[in-house]
Length: 249
Length: 256
Ligand SMILES: Nc1ncnc2c1ncn2[C@@H]1O[C@H](COP(=O)(O)OP(=O)(O)OP(=O)(O)O)[C@@H](O)[C@H]1O
Ligand SMILES: [Mg+2]
Image (cartoon, rainbow over all chains, first blue to last red; front, side):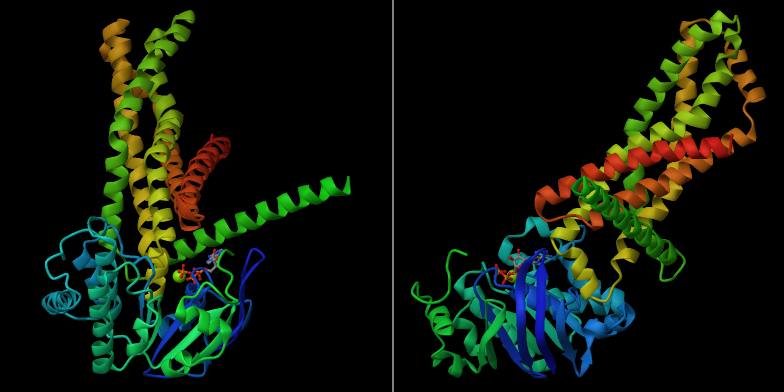
């Protein structure tokens, strides 16, 4: 279980998180939604230990990772898979090398075995024939899918997807959602998905958290969120222009 | 007045803090050099990077430096009637001073800047974060291979610069100005000592450390966006060049 407790984070006087609390149960899929620029990526970077909060705690299975030394933090990261918002593929490597990289560096698997697993993973995301391309030769959506394959290749027990489907067409979006769902059923990882696919993403998640103004405005099952009376949540899921969410700031 | 002091104080403090960060960065990289696993493939790749990027510009600047030296030294030496010393004069200036410094400055402009830009791009496109999130140490994967590669490649590049410069000087001195080719080389052998060669070697190795350290540090801590990377690149080139010249003077005055 992952607990974010009272997270505060500011950058050069800009308060991004102002006491955010979130509970992510083990083996469940939680989605974080919220206005663009409200701090979703910042929030999940605290779970990866890439950012340290100004105040608050990040408990992973009861251990506060904000207080850990780097080597201890790395032990937690061994079980982590991340799809970064921009893909973060290594541009000196081909797609295939990118996906193989975590296996090559972190496991003792043989070349043939790695290759087989990489090919399978690329097939799964529909890039079976693009393995030898370099990231800059791919479209934005293909990069996302390659990054998705890389995030899942080590069969991590905690996966963070930062906007896995933003910029993809509706058909691929559904297929990525389905892929996340089926891999989840197979491996039972805990997942945090940042998404703008509202309410499309609701179909595959156990819990929805709405981030607004530095705090989680509401968190609950998709049904609870749909039925919410919280004006922020209501405006966000209906995409209405009327309401408390300030569009221009 | 107090305001002025406050501003100056803040400036000094932030400069000190930056220096502290730079040294910690270097320390963590140096510490990692001796800790396995070593990334040999990365090392070879970066050695090729430095060599490839710099070779052409080194050949060009090396030959012209030697040629210019021949012209100027000939002019000076003729006043004392000792044109025969042109060979050792050129060789000593190149080996002790101009070879290490000029080739380091050239590599800074050519490979150092490219290195900063590349690492800066990896920073802003979250590739460095991706390494960290995979529990892989980005210093080991990105920084250490560059520093070790520079330590190996800089002396080699400098040697090429020296040799090509000496032949450039030969071209002008012997073929153009009519000094005897035999004296050019034989007096060189008499006057150039091992300690001159060693001084040049120490210089080039330390310049390799300076350039790779500063270029990597600036790229690694690059600001956001294309503007952040271009600022980091400029800063890396300027700071490397200054440090090269300052260190050159200090080393020269210790080891004269
Ligand atoms: N490392 C950083 N340094 C300074 N400011 C930052 C940093 N990271 C994020 N910010 C700021 O924090 C705010 C939230 O950024 P974040 O990337 O978390 O937004 P987001 O919710 O993920 O948006 P989007 O949906 O567009 O991806 C932004 O205003 C951004 O400028
Ligand atoms: Mg984001």
